[in-house]
Image (cartoon, rainbow, N blue to C red; front, side, top):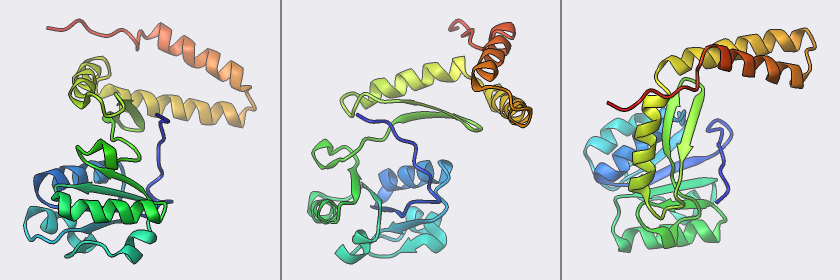
Length: 190
């Protein structure tokens, strides 16, 4: 597996689905910054309501799929998702069909977000429950304060770049801050 972090402002993204699985995926994509996201669903309900202006009240055509970079499919029947996944592959669009590894070009990762800090865990689709358990453990080790820590280091890095500080020296200083403040000490479980 090759890990990637996609910039949602530079990619054409879509979700095709129905029910709770598609709603969960929509929420995860929005948390990840996907503000431009076509949401295709043949059903009325919570997914359609939450999709708002991004809603397409039908499943995508082959031409619509061909304009995408990435397509997520969740909560559709075999008869619905197979033609969509095959159309995506023909168009060289990356596709992920939830819980159907044979139809996935990539796997969703368990993720933890703390501001600009993104930690991910993947088992390559083999054991998503285990990835989730590891992510829950990381929540303990990386509390909400990490958002502020990342912002602080980013501000320091900008000032160091303005001073023409070398990358090696910036890295040394960051290591010193992390060590001095014991940021990587994980609390023991309760």
